[in-house]
Length: 90
Image (cartoon, rainbow, N blue to C red; front, side, top):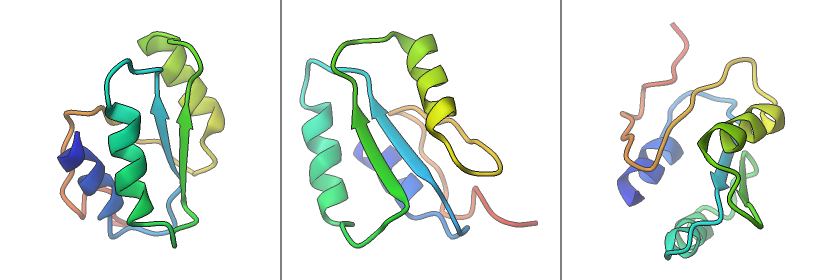
């Protein structure tokens, strides 16, 4: 999960609107995300939202789509690792 988050945060494309959703994980996922984002607190293009209750994969995805403000959407999960140039202007 840490590698997945690092890949997202290292994207060279700009501007980005990064929406990170935690679907009420019962483990330390939210803590790990918050601690990693604390290292990037100067970035205004990141929003971390922790659901109060588990919505399930479909409804959590729909929530993310509805929150997104960008021109295109890339979905990633905790085990998806992106190269820094994955989202780049061709």
